Image (cartoon, rainbow, N blue to C red; front, side, top):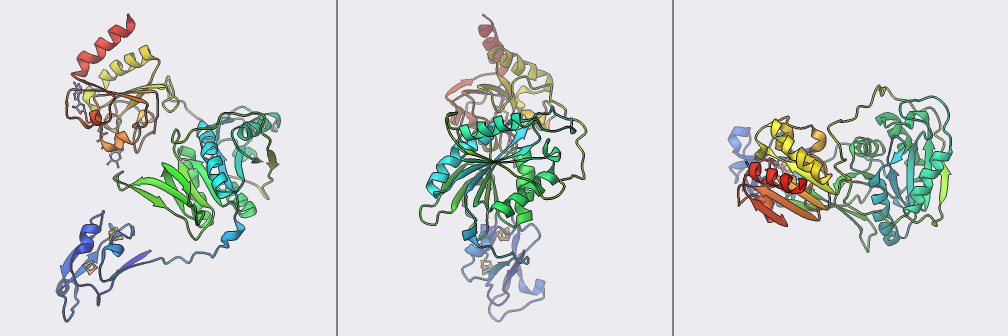
Length: 420
Ligand code: FAD
Ligand code: SF4
Ligand code: SF4
């Protein structure tokens, strides 16, 4: 990409400076830039902080700014692409809940688009984790595929290969890129999980299409039938709806718990299609060991109750209060980024924009101010309980129950009552 300010057109008015969210534009005297103009003494200069977002192009009243793509994109016949795919993510042979949620949303979108809903399942089933020899039993994979059909898929494409047993970037990217070329789906939805994030972007780059990460809403435009991909932008200050108009497939990732799965219906019929990869799938990296985070007793994203602690705890030892309360409630332990950044608790507990999105029945925010980046990860919780000594803390704006007080008084009192 390249951005250019037309020296003849720019009047140096500075309107673009305010429009740039990255502070990439300054207006300078032309003589400083070795340039001159019969009427305009100043000119806009754009520096390397530019992300080519395009905001200044729209802001300039004189059409003086242009962005050009230096990469020639291959032309695509949009009519060749048909159907909505959900990538069914499996870990240790178990389909992840986010895939069922995407099938739930996918079935609504497929109806609006008037197309089939398919799931794509990679793996090597019937074998225990870490053992990459032997043959798949076949039974297990059929059960998984039937489960996907029971959750809304009309078809399930299954590609079984030893190289796909555990997630690895290269073979997964090769396999999905091949399948896209072969079957030409119009839309692909994937979980915004560690796996989905790593691999959706690789696939999108490989097949030269767009990818909208972390969507919070998806819809089909009634007239153009294009996928409307909505996500928070610019530090969650605005919601953007993004369209992939000229390339296919349209690809989006969605976090866990944003959409709901359909009720499982084992009477649903569907087709299971076994796909053969033409050639050998391989990886330059090797999975040596997978280590579980022993600090997690209850899985954060699946928990009905979450007790989260923030910087208000003051020091790492005080997280024991959070753990004690969580134990009493059978809850998972969460944290703000401030607590994670301070090394008080591992990253796997972080809730928020750069952590996990959770939607429990009850969410306790203890010693957490409620910054917008924290809120986006937990505000869809059914009930939010905030404990904070500052009555003006932002968390109280979204809390259903607010306790203004010192957490070192309130939390022990709660634990005492619960123990009774
Ligand atoms: P603070 O904001 O310092 O709040 C501590 C709170 O504790 C205060 O409200 C204080 O009144 C209260 N308190 C202090 N002592 C007591 C006491 N004894 N009793 C009761 N209350 C007490 N943050 C996230 O959480 N998750 C994210 O994913 C995330 N992603 C980010 C991404 C980006 C790009 C950026 C820029 C920021 C991100 N942040 C994220 C950081 C976020 O902006 C905040 O800095 C962070 O959430 C603050 O954490 P906190 O509420 O624990 O700390
Ligand atoms: Fe004004 Fe456009 Fe020049 Fe920016 S680029 S200073 S908006 S004329
Ligand atoms: Fe700033 Fe975006 Fe314009 Fe680049 S394209 S100068 S980031 S407004």
